[in-house]
Image (tube, rainbow over the protein chains, first blue to last red):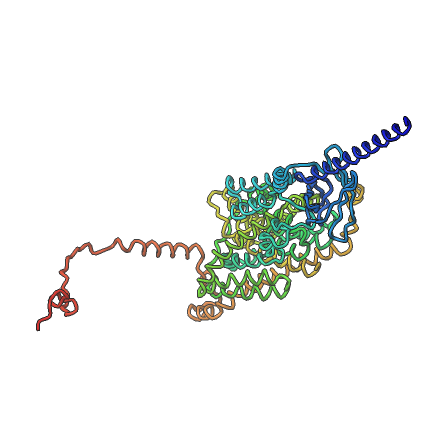
Length: 506
Length: 124
């Protein structure tokens, strides 16, 4: 009797404990389910590459949203993955709709969701939205490089406004640098169509003109339409100074080879010595498109810094007596000669260097529009509206191409160093050659060697520097007209040089 | 010099092969192109002014005509154009200073006549 009662009591206790345990297990499962479906689970992991071309990695967020109907959405940078979740005991099974992704097991530990190696923290939907917004702002994506480049852009704008150094170029380039270095969300395989290097973005479309070398010939058309070659035609021997200064291109080419650049890259870097922005862009777009940004920035910034770079070397190489030389006033040039120059000039130079045809063709065509005097409207458009539009587009896109992660490399620093050297070599080459010419010239025909420095084709800055230095030596000696001759022949010379490098290296 | 640079890691062997050739030939071609232009444009005025020179030689009965006889220096052209500009610019100042008032008489036309206005009833 006693034993039977004991047995019943034991069965009852056993039944009750099973019931209790089962009930508490059920309660635990419901608790996990309610935790899962409340808000979003957000993970932040390092190691995401910003682009396929860059090795830089950044931290990125991904979120899982569990729904009561047992479905879930995993929102990662590239795409959304959907699937169904199941709870067995404490384990959560994530079965993805895509057959490519295997089922994953997750668990909740200390209010954190652990999925494989990733840990997700629970946030309310609104807070997860804020995190998402924050991730797309510039703040989390900014790097030291971006800040440095923005400061460089501001410095360019400062130089242009404060010192009037090539403002038409430095303002668009400086602002372009700021635009290109506004940090934004980047990830390999993810295209927001914002940055200049992201296919389909507006900036990318505008940059097409730089990449394909479309803008430089249009700039040359405008230069041709605004250049008066009469100083060159009246004293043709000064044209040789434009050729002498091109030594900067070829010595820099050798220097770049020595520093380990490939021949094509070295050619593109060497053209910085031509001191001609459009030519530098044209050649680098053909020979080494990946270096367009640093080459263009180096070329344009050194062009703007011509008033600082050239004078010390001009004073060093020439004596006071030489700087006082007065040159014979240029003769007046007939209309026929002016019309002949673009036609004969094109035929001669383009036959020698056909690779420079887009540049030379447009330069001489623009000049013919001007000198023919019957196409005034076309010449006016080429030298005003057209060149202004292209300068804006070229400046802003070249500036924006200096996106920190692409631009700030040791290669860029080397290019800047070589660029400075090439400007110095070109200046010295022109000055020495002018001195050499004076050995053979007599009497009135002697030239002021200062004008040799104008052989670098930074038009009209280097001619203006020559005038300034000439006036310092003798306030009544105006060299501007004479300096314009080597200056514009430098434009022709650098275009021919670019064509030669193109045909040798492409 | 070169061994020293080689020690610090600058390799000149890369330049030796084709680099120097490209540099020298390239520079010479640039020179050649511009020297050709120099030659052409030094000779062009001689061809253009050949006839004028010939006529002057016959007229003055001289064996040689200097360039100064054919061309005007840029400075002289600038002086002439400045003088012309100033002359034409100041021309309006040289007026007769006679102020006249002329009575304006309009030729009669029935189109502008006030007699045949729309406010006047047509006579039957």
